[in-house]
Length: 454
Ligand code: HEM
Image (tube, rainbow, N blue to C red; front, side, top):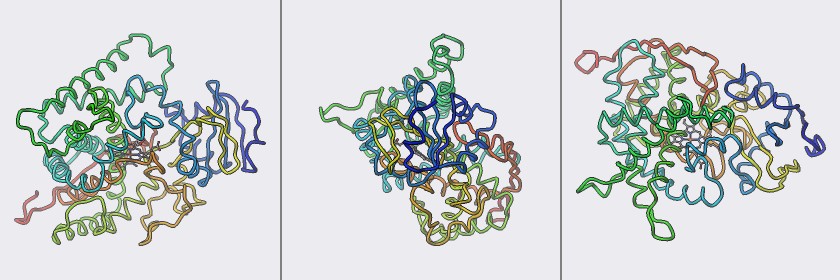
């Protein structure tokens, strides 16, 4: 039982839970973590419990969350869940802490800044069109969108000219590494030390991925110095000692960016198809809006200023279908949040998913209602709507994600009409993100100018 509570809570409504029970229920492998997290969010501002020999605090008050991520950011680092995967995933930007994190963000910001992302749009469009061209009319649209976003990430990280065979290998290894990361977050430490078939397969995938990245780092004779892919950008980085990044650091970064970017964006797009299949009028509005922007010569970019309905729809999607269940941090010092006292080493968590569905803040709750976001966005208190996080660790790929989502939605709706898209888990199932499972879909090719199906 954690000590000193509720006195440490400075008047916030507090629930003290016992033992490992609550932690187990929050993990993706638990029976119904979504229902549990929803209940937590409405039951008290602060939940506390002790597990794995340390205190855990689960926050549901938006201002406390905002303070942790922004105002008191220097007092927090990534927490216990991340420690467990470091051996496999390395120390890329998702896992790095303190000054090391700041150093990595500096050069990643170069790749992810708006104008650089706009420069990547051609590569993104090529991948999306090539993928759409081979879609069947009956398909698992979730798998198709995962493949598409993964391929976009691979093309923008490794360079557009990556060959098909090479892509398939990298796709397989990255997939295995991500699977391993998920598995290692919840598997007991002793199990990971045994050379089981699964553990060896996971370690082997990481070794092969690192080897592929090392090969990609060696520029071919006469390579274009203005290449925009992440590996090329990282090859230009020099440390304070004038030395380039090591192959290991680049590999860690590729894994970190893929881990953070592929699953979140693909899952969001997948849920969008489920919503659009239910609302053919909205589908038509989005199709017409993007087609009109294209006719006016508006280039793809992260801004979406010329496609306000799409911006509203995606904002609402990231509210009610926020892909991330729990975000966690750990205090590096004895600290406090608005009077709430947290000793060094306390693990602190919150759920953007539950917050976004809390009717106290968003009357629509779990329902998809784009009207939630009017022309001025959605006026809620800070810390309440955080689809891309907040503070120095907010999503470095946000601009990339907006542009990629616009390209995928616009090109997809130009190519096909979604007639059916039914999720295997309509309420979502938490794994790395809150997934729909397979999405059985039926699409019809849009007629070309000559009246033929595209
Ligand atoms: C709709 C899509 C996306 C959503 C909802 C999303 C959400 C988030 C959130 C909430 C965080 C903060 C996590 C925390 O505070 O611990 C984050 C971090 C991150 N995201 Fe995204 N993300 C998306 C797409 C992407 C894409 C496309 C990329 C890369 C191409 C990306 C790369 C990253 C990275 C590298 C971090 C870690 C940043 C750091 O720790 O400094 N994300 N994302």
